[in-house]
Length: 336
Image (cartoon, rainbow, N blue to C red; front, side, top):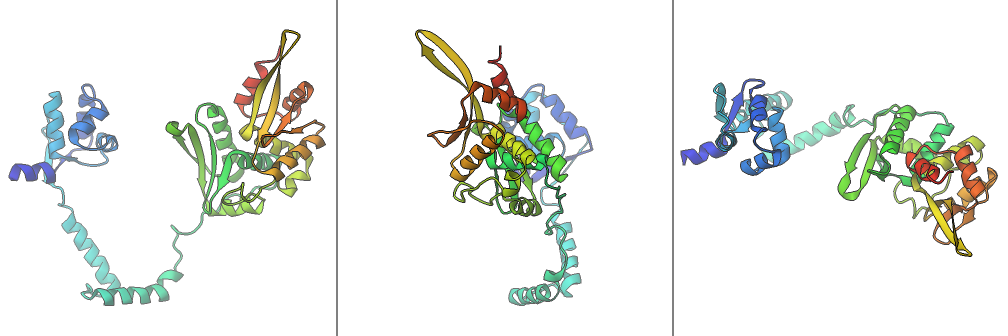
């Protein structure tokens, strides 16, 4: 029984650096996955042990030592897993007495007194952790209009988050551009999450003020397709803004593809440019914007807008341009 108790409840405390050194020797013989299997825990736990974030169970130290032949460090202290609870309990009791004057025995009474405190004092206090964080609100510009185009293409907003979803391989370089654009516009460093299993990379900013600001500029919150979203009027009215917005749209939901056809036994190939969206108002606004810039777009039969003419595609990359290296490579691969 004592051995069983030691296995489950005893933990080992090393001096700083010793636990990390122990794992360095073990890593020469076992992978993280092997360690996790041997210690009956997750790989993340093993990594936390390795960087000394947490102390280790005694049985894990002994199991790793027995498996690899690496000696258990001599300078260590074994303690009960719950040795800290007495100290934590005393700290909590002191805080409760300071707040309520005693340790409440009646739960209903304690709850009622807490509710009275909350209504009188608590809810009126400024809680910094709950307060929305301030963001930089840039003036309307071509740079901001391009970000609006990116959001209309591969972006989306919930009540508290702004996110752009890109392909985790094809758009790897473009991901860096979008991250820099967000930081330049709003002075916020976004969080980026790669999910290879789903082939996506999510660039996320959790800021209520940013959602409200972008919503005020014309971006919808929630399902943008159901809301039949469209290019904001302030973008449509300005030639430089609409050009930048088109770039953001085509860089995300656009594609460069090769059209092939045969005439009298000879094969001809040339590039076309297409943008796809389930929002009819947006497709028509893109057509109007392209026409205003001197292009000859065509509304396709599959929720797309196309530039079919060779001269139009060439002029698009010259006048509108692209910040997505994927599109530039696909276009330039056919030049010459």
